Length: 538
Image 1 (tube, helix red, strand yellow):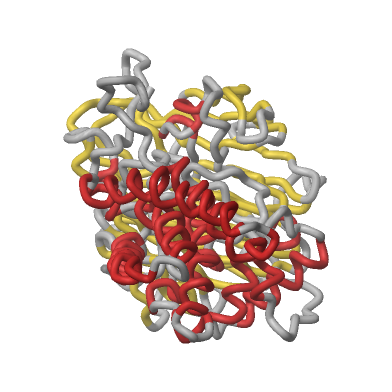
Image 2: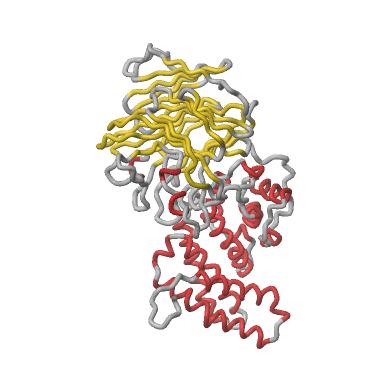
């Protein structure tokens, strides 16, 4: 369409980038097999067919400088220029300009915590394209990869390590935003960051990718492979990763009965490109098996593409429109703020303010707190204020079978179960049904536990992880009528010598793990304090 006479539309420089990069690599790697005329044909293709379109985008399309497109197009732009430079040295000035643009755009794309807003699939695509280019530029300047790489490029590697799944032995990433679950991190990136980063996890990841054979067609790793490869037997281990700017937090803890349990909370700013309406949603994995899932994304030509990323298909407290319309976290909204993320002595305390992630004016307050005394229990504390008297549904997506047993919902995986218990509320309706598919086109169950219509909701829901086959659960929940002054609800969770008291009041919550710590949440922030007496008023 873009080549029709009089057409002003163009799909940007995706095609030109690919061909300029390919032509330059042919000149560099196989130029010795070509005659002078053959090499000139390739140089002419770069200079006359590829670079003009790319340069046009860089000079006229300002938006590409604030997202991944400009970074990716830089690969074809600079590789092409490097390919013609030995014969036409006057292109050197344009290379210098293109380098400045590249580093500026990486700085625009990468947030201070190293994260990006499009999810790991687009991170891998963007920096999988950039890393060979950076290697070529380092060679051009007579430097090593580490000497040439910018601080932004090095720092963003931390984002990938934080967004890892426990599936696939720890070599895959979480299917958040436009990403496919169960996809390995590219070997070329793991090899490059083994040289760039001082974090040993990259070398371990590269070794694990080699061990599993997950090297795909990415031969770049052969060029930058680290001289010494880790011999670690397992790369899945306890960790706590917080990315406050992009609003992502992962905790992996080990349980003697369950193995490694991952809990991930999604939040952060909304992004107008490849984002999903997941602000406040969570993921639960047990030994690499995902019990509460993010569905990821289908191929873009599939009719489910526009549905799979909606708020209705995420693990949220979801507003039920009286007329049945979908309620949105739109792309133009500000998004959520990860307001608190603490972990100490095995206890995890999280909070996300999601008020501004939804349709404008829908909520005056939408806050989700998470309190977890151990790897096998998560109290999800949702606090809602809105102008409309709407029902709210606690939603959870899973590829595994679900069943409702006397008001408690079970999600039955092969390695572990989830036991979902409303603690201070009683659903007026519980619906379990297949609704749509996941990124691998598998039917996916959606749980809707519906709270009655109101303008204000405070719902505390326990999500317990139990070994597969356990029909009763481990934790016992006892409502405490002897509440501290000002508390609206108090519950004590007890199991095998471990207990936690959780009580709530307006805009606040307190978690007490005897002998360990006490956490107090005022508004959006958790603080850890000395353990107070249980009867101490707020």
